[in-house]
Image 1 (cartoon, rainbow, N blue to C red):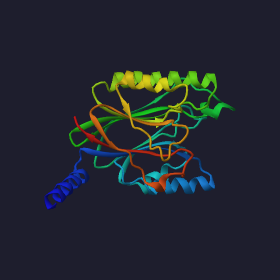
Image 2: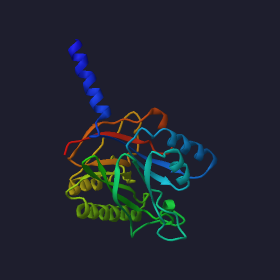
Image 3: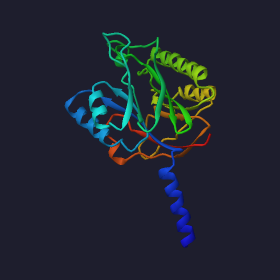
Image 4: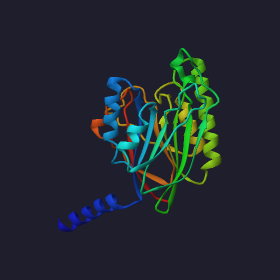
Length: 257
């Protein structure tokens, strides 16, 4: 019994202190600067500091709050495609013990919706790429938010956007460990789930399975990962649920090569 307890303790210590393990969160925070919305976003910010990597979508008002309250991270914030529209609301946070080697923001050429169809053309949607170094391992990170809405045009635009993301990953990260996170606005239990399956097939990625306790209806938020990463478990603090119109996704990985 003592021997078994020591082995178990060793496994826990190795997990906690090994840099080969990474913990991430992916969250569409619904970051509009309303009275109730601001309080919820501040509560989200308070409860994500235990992660190594942070992926936010829809942060349109809280850059200063994120930087000031999560000062153990380096952040990549999105920019505006044009001055008259919003940025994409995308954020990647990398704990400062890890190194950001490179990053780039890529805008989608296609969008749908000005006054209707979720107003997507008022946001500079696209994706952020970042290559980071964790000890001796390199990982390519992607954060994205695809077009919303359910019209035929929305679905056509999403297909073009996912094609652009796929092409970029194949050119930039074909030999790298990869994590792709974001709000794809494609329900995996809907009629367009084939787009997710094709994306996995074309990029050779897998995706984290949702926690059925919280993901009961539309499953549109994703974390994808490459074969060089071993997905250990799904874990998100209960305090984060119901703070946004999206549930958060969390995952822990071991870097295996």
